[in-house]
Amino acid sequence: MTASPRVVIHEDAQTLAGDTASMLLDRLESAQGRGEVPHVGLTGGTIADTLHREVARRAADSSVDWSRVVFWWGDERFVEAGSPDRNARQAREAFLDALGVPEGNVHEVPAADAVATAEDAAAAYSEAMRTQGAGFFEVLMLGVGPDGHVASLFPGHEALDATDAVAVAVHDSPKPPPDRVTLTFEALDRARAVWFLVSGDGKADAVAAALAGGDLHEIPARGVSGEQETLWLLDEAAASSL
Image (cartoon, rainbow, N blue to C red; front, side):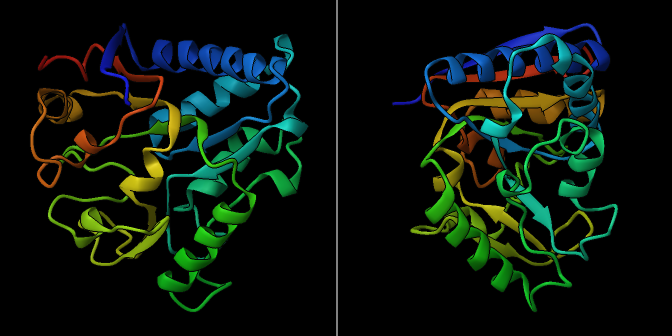
């Protein structure tokens, strides 16, 4: 059973990031209040970076125990650990380090200077998620590309049809860098809440196409939904084609 998508439109990207940061803190507080250790799936990109900085800024006013939150990524670029292209590096610099999240609670996809191939990285990340994951995300945050891609699941790529797999390697990405690791649809769909974070008019047509439904091979963002809620958190520009 999955939740039907709900659209929430914000005035601009900064408002979108701030409101989402507050929502995330509230959700983590609630999960911890139930005695749970919430697992969160992070994404990369400009709006994610703004969101992460808002989380760091607002965290002092929340009761979230950051030693009891676990972080993962929906996808990662297969580059060296120090590369600015790494989603994990971006998140560490924006909020994870500032909040003192324990190293054991941050599960990165192995970098290109740690393992030989993207396939090796995908295998290691899959094993980590099987052995150290909760079996689901409390919140999974995702961006959407102008072509409708989500995580590193791109239109027409074979990874869209991966089964019985947690994470897979992606080569020849239409967006650089070319080599990546992504969670599969099967893994992405194991989330209580899926939040799509989208800003800018360059994403407007993709948002409209995803919400219209249809073949996920054309618009992969159609293929992910949460068990309890699926939110499309947009600024006015990203919502302009709805």
